[in-house]
Image 1: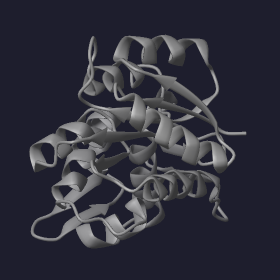
Image 2: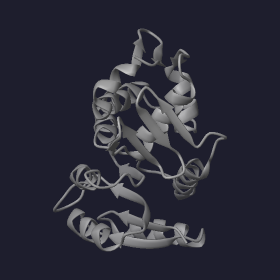
Image 3: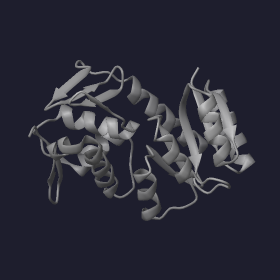
Image 4: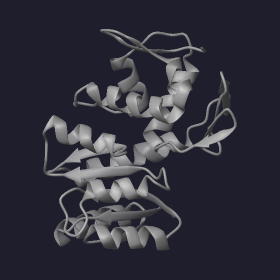
Length: 223
């Protein structure tokens, strides 16, 4: 049974989502503020997904997410009443994997969660990709650069996988959105640029392998 944590200061939203996800076979944990969410995350080692509201007391969603990303790449769906592009980009910069704006359909949120787990289960013929000192293992969901482990978020891992599977191929932002986000995405394509910027930073000097194609997208090639 997958374990899910719902973090929202509105009890009605927590109850609504808990009911929907429980019916789908999830074990659901609830937290009404950021501090309790972090305590639960430390106590419960096998949480598979977090649905995290941004506007909360004690610690907001951005702060909670940044703390979680110090030690874990667990998938996180941000839930917020804010719909401005800047807020969405800030969420992705903080390490979010998905971003859902209120009001929302609980069924859609369940579908987003299921899509994440399908992508986690998806395996290709080649479970280990190795290019230019970067080794990506899909089975263990790990990445090393010149033998040193690199901690990537779920979405950063998927993005790097897609780049390494398409080495020396020019990839448009639309192609990347369709392949990595894997659903009808209506946000700004700058989301990709934000993730690429973070991925490059985490790869260190190997980040130069991700080349920008101005006006189009990116190409991954060995240095």
